[in-house]
Image (tube, rainbow, N blue to C red):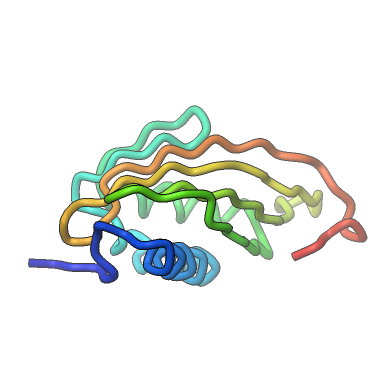
Length: 136
């Protein structure tokens, strides 16, 4: 059985560990690596998109990082309970035309007993910035 430690139920310490692992994986910009943290039947809402399963996650992330260049993400602990973690995040990137953005948002995560994320609900807002305004 595939497991991704730490496993639920989470403590504040293990929730923060899980968040740092997610941040590191997303900053690798490796869709296959990122997808392995999610259950085979993982459900996502990302803005107005709905995804189901690892194959759709890989396709989504591949497209994302082809269009969101020099991507850098920072996640922060918000709360946790049992097998759920809430995070606040921001990331910066530029599009292929060179226009910079900072995206802000919140994610609600739910994990299965093997520590794989089975649900990810993300609410995200983008703000156009100049390159000089970058923080990450």
